[in-house]
Length: 468
Image (tube, rainbow, N blue to C red; front, side, top):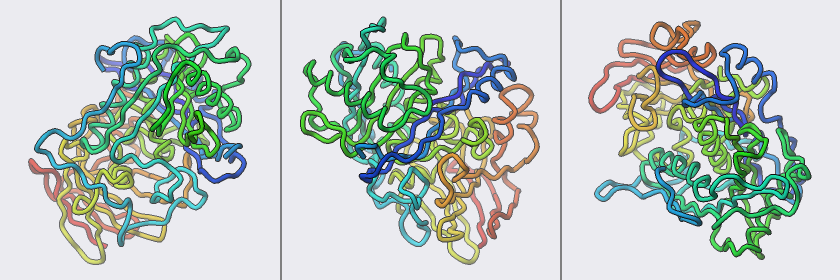
């Protein structure tokens, strides 16, 4: 999905952009496209600009977000760049560090039901989406148009996205997932002018497939090898009049490259005046849709973030690490790192989500499709910019569709607007409200029939007592 336009924040520190692109990884069922929702409401953009004085351009990192849409099966189902066609790859786990196990996702007594419609969701995998384990190859088709020839260097434009994305995936997976990103050697000319494609917010899967297929065919004609490709990103240059809100992702069953079927594809846009944080954060957001994650912002309220705040890139991009539940779904946390809490009372140590060598979470299954999760969030790794440290509690419900609150963060200080530490204009009111959501040592809270007490913080994390 596309992201909300950058919002200017006050103070010395600017924060990253709120998300909303129409992108959803869709079911690979050979059916006609499922309806898609608009990427970002125009009203949200106007509301954000009026509230924060935002403009489409920003020189500093802004609050960048990313939003997605329900899956719809397709109709036909860092640093310096290394030159044209450079292969970019996320490095594996450092020597001497154990890789996280590639165990089954969301399994065992705390498992919940899959998303019932086969869309992106918080439930376990059902075989319809790519699972980010091991190594995947992504081909970036750098596409320009007869009426809009590229103005940037293709290698520099691809590196702008891949350097950030590879670092994000490396850190979030604790080095356990590797993605190789290979851009085309140069810009690939699309056969039709930009105006002929009709790509915009809310683009249907059929229109998207035509666009991606044309890009793939043009890349093949230019000599690109798609053998071994698992994902495709079609990247436009910054002179194309489409902001990151137009970006989207889908899975397909009839997209092909020289006889090879390609299942996962995303469109990537970003204008010269759009902040780097907004563009890059949205690129990663789209990738996570292709891996089956849902939108955590409110698609029915202009992509507002009252459900999950800035605690996951599927709510606000480039602000924090993934929730521990999503890492469990991916297999980036498993085994002893996921404590399944049964009836009774037990004490657990929660290792911070951003820890470079892996984290630990506690899960209480509260129903066939629901669970309560407790995890530690501290300023380490991809969480280095969070406002409040502590124990984050949230509920997950796989019966709730993407964009309607399948994850809901429990607020330790409801109505605080972020309080003295996280409010006061540091961020927009809607984002600040959950910025101080984590619970502190000495606190006790009951939710969904489960009582969680935060006992203490140590060098290893937070100790909690959970009674269910």
